[in-house]
Length: 241
Image 1 (cartoon, rainbow, N blue to C red):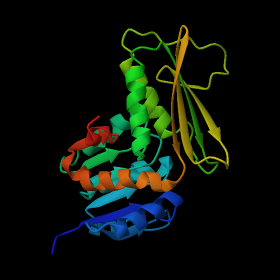
Image 2 (image 1 turned 120 degrees about the vertical axis):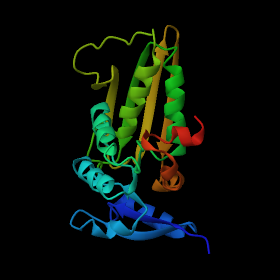
Image 3 (image 1 turned 180 degrees about the vertical axis):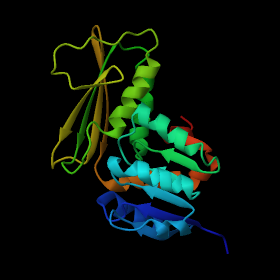
Image 4 (image 1 turned 30 degrees about the horizontal axis):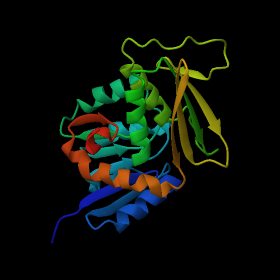
């Protein structure tokens, strides 16, 4: 009998967490051994090989500390990972080099492609802005996907100079990119990346219409995390991007 990977889920009763639990249950090579929510002890996670965290930004750092201390690999789908917070996670991870941490700003394959294409376009277009749209239950803004996209755009710009910010109506400035956040009950998860140059515009858009779109990326992360030493940000490398 082939051994399966034992998985625990933090934030299991949330909308994303519940769907992840169902996807794990449906996978022949994975076994769901623990479901943990805010009021629960983490002790049941000791049975897991990999822990998936889909909680909230205020809780995730304590969860990372616990998992590193207890030797549990993590796939992290929680938002709020600024460059400073990622640096802190890298410092925590050094306490236990046997643990792998995969931080995923977005699990959607299409969203990952959108970010990769935006990174390429940033080399050629001086002006870039991001508009992200999410359901009204999303507690953070801008989204982790928008922050990660802005980081990639900023890092790829090279000698291309960002457009200056004018006034206070241009959204939040993230890594020298203007990011606008929209929240409403008619959305799930959507993002436009708007590039412009003299005489032309380029828009890269991604729409997640159902949380089912995230499950292939979640399962990919669970299956691959143990082979990614230290801290990895994004699924891009696992997709060959």
